[in-house]
Structures are given as structure tokens and as C-alpha cells.
Length: 208
Image (cartoon, rainbow, N blue to C red):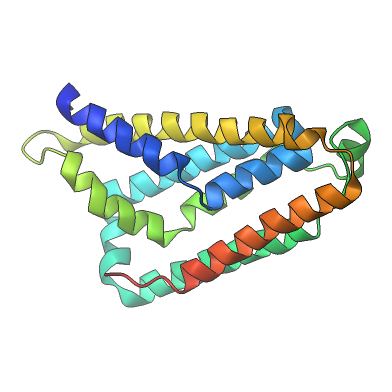
């Protein structure tokens, strides 16, 4: 991939990752409830989800979601239900400050956070359709495709992991200083409400 093409793609990746969405909500929720060290696992899960989406598009499976109404609807409703499920869990999370007591009271393994992050990005057909619309602008069909997709996946993945780690750190270091159970409870409900809203928005998403 030429540098003149890679730089615009890098800028587009940064803009996409920084925009508020289910991934950002998941990262901040993990940072708030589990701290940076443990919550960082969700950022790696979100990275794997991005790579899953890129692989689907690169393998041509994304085209199936873009052309098959049934396939798209199935993945769409599964993804929407998953986001609502995460929202309910976040809403009901215990109002405990970060620290040893809170961690011991509500232990969540890094593997569970990793899978949660993967599910948020991988089970989002809106992301697949978006990649199908954006990636062709940066791919030279006259050149070998595999190296180009590897560069795209590495770039998008590095940006996503960096930004999501920043969201985890933001929630863990700033929001995590809160010690009032009432404030933490409302923060959890706020993140939970955002998840549910994202799930409802995904359920109502219609392809152009």
C-alpha cells in the first residue's frame, strides 16, 4: 500500500475509533468496574473483533451480509440482543469503588472481558457494511490483495487497541477515583443505558 493511500486510511481509522460507540462504552465500563490492568483485556477483545470483521470482508463473507437480507437480519438481531444484554449487566453492576475490595467482590476474568470485547465488535453487521463501503477506496485491485489487507488490518487494529486502551485508562483513572456508591451506581446505569441505546439503534439500522 502506497504511503499516499495509507495516511488517509490511518486518519480514517483514528476518526472511526475515536467516535463514541459500543466499543468505547465497553472499554469505559470495563475501566470503571475493573481498573486498567484487568479492564485492558476488553481492548484486546475489541481488537480481535476488528480483525474478525476485516477478515470477513477480505474473505468475501461480508458481501453475503451486504446482499442477503436474511443473513444480515440474523446477525443484526444477535448483535442488538448482545448489546442490550451487556447494557442490562452494566446497569445492574454493583456500586463499588475500584480497589481490592471491589475486585474481590465482583471478580471477572480477563478471558471473559476479552470475549465480551470481541463480541461487541464482531457481532456488529453495521461495522461489516461500513468496512465494505470504506475499504474499496483504499485497495488497489490491480495489485495483490492479501498484503494490502494485512496492512489494513494491522493499521486499523493498532489504532483501535490504542484508542480503546485510552478509554479504559480514562475510566479507571478518572472515574475510578469516585468513592460514592450513588455516583458509581449512576455511572453504571449511564453506561448501561448507552449500551441499550446502541442495541436499539442497531436493531433499527437499515442498509442503504
